[in-house]
Amino acid sequence: MSGHDAREASGTPAAAVAERLRITEIFHSIQGEADAIGWRTVFVRLTGCPLRCVWCDTEYSFYGGNWHAIDDILAEVATHGAKHVCVTGGEPLAQKRCLILLRKLCDAGYEVSLETSGALDVSAVDPRVRKVLDLKAPDSGESGRNLWSNLDHLLPHDQIKIVIASRADYEWARAMLAEHALADRCMVLFSPVHGAVEPRDLAEWIIADKLPVRFQLQLHKLLWNDARGK
Image (cartoon, rainbow, N blue to C red; front, side):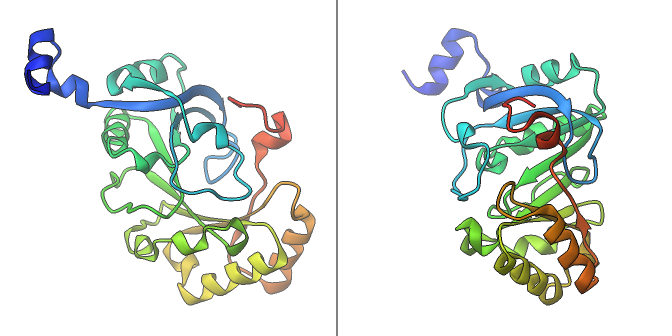
């Protein structure tokens, strides 16, 4: 019996089977970064990531997870009564049906943000979504994976984030800021790697160079350290 026939025999519509995502966790917290910082937010963390950044703080999302129908994900999001929803990972765009989830969240009236590595094509992301594109600096070990064509698909409400682990990373970020006119495209955020760069040092570098970027700390780490689901 073919897969299609098996679905028909079970009475499960093919579309219902197809519209699923592997989810690591869904949780209600405070947004700790980007332009929605401080807002009560529901986070939908998808499982899987093709990158292995050396400073990654969500390695638990690389494997495992459970399959959820997209409509069930929306139903769980709704129980928290928050206006803001952040789809994150891992790398959420590694699951192609993430695009369906993003569209349905926007259709439901949420303020939706997408945290993405910048290594996968963002051109098909619903334009209502605020894309937070995480360009990888050299000390991440994954700077060769940056898909620079993604810059052409950024809208004014999107954001570029560069996580900085050293002075060398900062100098790379400063060079990319100028070479690609990043600040003319959208908001640019510089963030220190927790425990690798002193936040004050990064702030002072930005001030000294008069960069048109927004300094940020991860608010959730200040509140809950690295607690999962926070």
